[in-house]
Every structure is written in C-alpha cells, then in structure tokens.
Image (cartoon, rainbow, N blue to C red; front, side, top):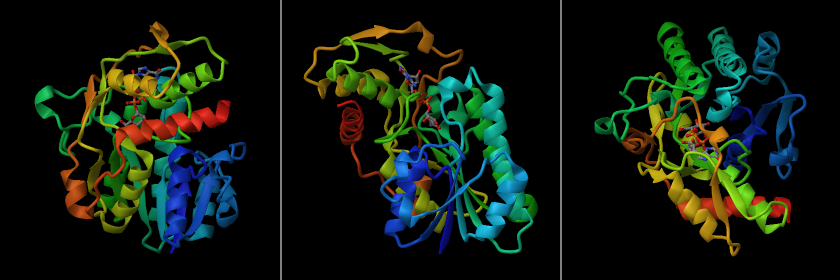
Length: 317
Ligand code: GDD
C-alpha cells in the first residue's frame, strides 16, 4: 500500500509516519522546501520525501499523480488557533487551498484514492452547555480564522464526495498533545517554560493565558492510531469526531505539569495571550468513531503531559 502524508515533518505527521511504517506501509511524504526534518530524523531513510508547497497547485498535483498513492492523509496546515487571529490571510490561504487543491487533483484521477481530511473541533465554535458533548451533527460555527479554514475544508471534502465521488473521510480531531508539538499550543507552551526554568534559562515565573477554558485532550499517538483506523474503516463523505470524551480545565493541565517539577514555580497571567474570541469548552462525543472503528484512547493525560515535559527537558538540558 502506498501512503502519502502531507505535513509529514510536522508534529502529527511524524507520529503518523512512524505508525504507518510499523504497519509495513510504503510511506511518501510532502514537506516544505525549508522545513526542519528534526521530527522525522530517526525514520527519514525509510521515507520517500518530496519538497512541495501545498499552495502550488501545479506542483502538488504533479507530485500526487507521480506518487500515485492509494491513501492520502492531509495534515499540512497552519494549526495554531491563537496565531491565526494575527495571520488570517495566511491561515485561510494555506488551509483551504491545500485541501481544495488535493481534492481537485483527486477528482481528475482515474484511481479511487482515499483521503483523510483532518479537521478540528475548533470549527464547532462556542457550543451551548446543553449540546456538550458535541456530536458530529452540531453546526459549524467557528470563531477563529483557523476554525473557519477547517470548517471550509471539511465542507469541501463533503462537497467533492457528493459532487464527484472523491473518497474523502472527514476527521474532526479535538485537542491533542505530546512530544514534538511546537510552541503556540498550550501544553508545549507550558512544558517548554518549565523545562527552561529547570535549566536556569528562565526565572521561576511562568506566563500563561486563559486558564478557565476546558479542552478534550488526547495523546497524539492515540490520535494517529485513530486516523489510520478511520482511513481503513471510515465512510467517505462522513464526519467523525476523534476525542477522549473528557474535558480538562487548562488550570488543571497547568497544575499537573507544575507538579511534575521539583522547582517552585510562580504563575503570571499574560494578557497578550488572550484571544479576540475564546471557546470556553470543547468536549466531544466519540461514539460514532468507537462504533465504526473500534478505536478508544489508551494513553492517560498524565502520561501525555509527562512525556511532553521530558521532550522539552531533553531539548534544554
Ligand atoms: N496556546 C496557548 N498558550 N494557549 C493557552 C495558553 C498559552 O500559553 N494559556 C492558556 N491557553 C488556553 C487557550 O486560550 C485555549 O483556551 C486553551 O488554552 C487551548 O489552547 P491551544 O493549545 O492553543 O488549543 P486550541 O484549543 O485553541 O486549538 C487546538 O486544538 C484544536 C482542536 O480543538 C489546536 O491544537 C488546533 O490545531 C486543533 O485543531
């Protein structure tokens, strides 16, 4: 089986590539010309890598056709919600065009290629308490440029399936964390500061944003296992939440991370981290995913946080 991953050198892409290699797949990957390959250092030799910017339609199209994959996992995206408020043009441009260009390429190929379009719970926006846990039937009402870009991608996947029979499966991932996730997301933002404090690079004061929000956080290794199962068992055109079904307050995430350090750490709110619009709670209903694929998360939040903190400790020690 030939599998193509867009964004293979990213946080999620690198974990997915490792998993697919273990399953004996032939893994092809697309990364940006100037992208760091640090995340895939250990497996680089086993991969077929191509430089390609997903916003270049002609190049993307020719790479996909030349690779002639059986399956595509579309992960390449600008994925920080916080940063999307200051770079809406880039986020909308890259995320929507990337998805559209892939779907448009597949529409014109004779071979039926299955493609997993990776969406986000951020596209649900602010959901009423009575609608929690969020099912796939809830309306898409995003409140961030990132959420809008993911909602559009999800709808494009649906439309290309309905109009042209493109075999697109719509994965709606809730928050996930783990080793290799970059700065700009809450767990690495917190864990990297703790590691820097321990290494004496920062004074023992952590800067944090809004601690009152709640997120359904899974381990990235569980999420990529879910993506593979969806690729194998998901129905084209259908949407699937991938989430733990539990919500943790950001305050409790911070508390666990601080408890993993021997340092005495103070916490300071940084107003600059507040967003123009915030989603108070994201907690998903994963029953469709469980029923169709048999998936369930295996890794505890404590283990995810500890592994992530150790990742940052290795970087700064
Ligand atoms: N990033 C960040 N950094 N967020 C902070 C911080 C901080 O220092 N302090 C508090 N927060 C709060 C944010 O305001 C938000 O309420 C929550 O922590 C989670 O923030 P993120 O980790 O940036 O995640 P997100 O929920 O906005 O989006 C993530 O999840 C989506 C799925 O729901 C991202 O991983 C998206 O790419 C993903 O699609």
